[in-house]
Image (tube, rainbow, N blue to C red; front, side, top):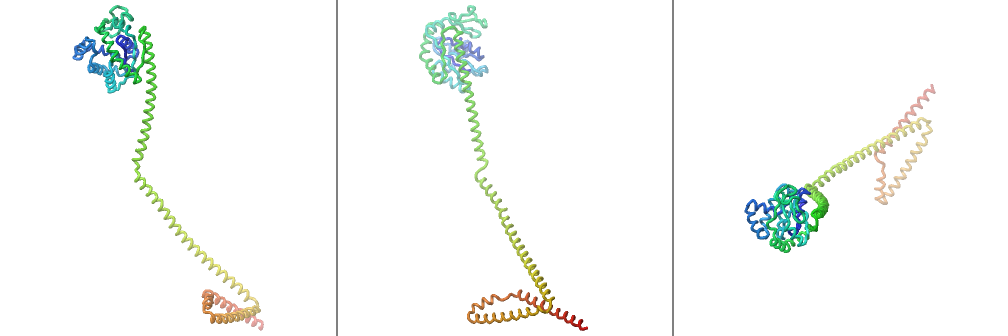
Length: 397
């Protein structure tokens, strides 16, 4: 926790700051103590501060900020700290925010201890502080167990030199004019919480602890939500970076070339398939033609074989079968003669018909087949005659 204690002089900031530092084990940084150490050490800053403090004026911002920067740079302030007595004006508050922003130590809580003026006057006149450990006491409200000695370390107690009526009155006027602007500054930022400083120190401390714990819980919930937002934002950014990286690694023209190549490769086997299908179709067509030719030749052979068989049967019978053959020949001769006569007449009338008639002429292959058939028939008849002659000759004998 990083806490700024606000309030008028004598409101109990020192007492409550000391207890808070002990409770949370963080350093209490009092600008007054730091300046008094510088004055005791006799440094240039201490000498300049002594003249201002003796006159009841506020030390310059440059001196105070220099002392605070040196104190916050120590390792014990990394976990948190309590600032007592600073900032005292609006300019100091703004400069402190800038300094803490540079050190990455922003303020978590601005705690105002509110006390009326009469109570403040009594406290300022009666307050004492330990020279060794810095513990605060008041002879009217919180006196030590032993007069002049610290209850914690046994150190000597002393009264501050600026705790006189004139100085106190001057400091209260400065507080009303300047420090109240600081209260409003932190109120606008939403960091201000207020505690009543009237009553026993223990009661005031319990109220202070309650405010600090509530602030810690609120900060924890804010941190959780902030971390969640950061994680979500980081994941979204990684997603966007991944998408842009994917787009960058696969540019549009390369994709087009790849697609074109793939389509070209895909087209080649299709073309081959077409060619092969044509070849196959041609082969199948040629095969079909060859098979058709073979079947035609086979059918022709079968027909010739059947014809020859029937002719043999006819020839093997008695010569009675000669008559219809002769009649057929004569009839066919007569029909042929009639056809010729008709063809001659039609040829004389229309030459076009001659052409059509000529187109009906018997092909050469058919003529050969007919001539073969007639020759076969003649041979069969000759054989039969010879066989008949032999039989007749035998009978005669």
